[in-house]
Image (cartoon, rainbow, N blue to C red; front, side, top):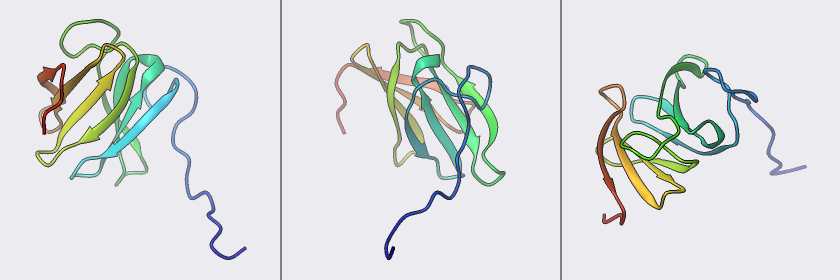
Amino acid sequence: NAGALSLVRSVGSDGNTPGKFNCPRGVAMTRNGLLAVCDSGNHRIQLLDSTNGFAFVREFGSYGEGEGKFDKPLDVAVNSKDEILVTEDRHRVQIFDSQGGAQFVEQSWYLVV
């Protein structure tokens, strides 16, 4: 079938250990090739190395209300500063520095670009 798409690769499986997901919701790529995966059911963001077979690099976040914590993160994006933006069920956007081990930068109840 002309124009048909075929699966190239699948990454991860069901679970809560590094490299496994519970309801992944969104993905984004950093400038240096890290795939940020919004692992909603595990209340975290996982970073995988797209230049090394999508090997697990690190994760950040856990369940909660404070800075750097999530309640079912909904999506992830990367901005022009290579920061990782995470939306979640608590009606906020949290911004993290992808270069320094995903350190919390700021949060906003309203995103202004």
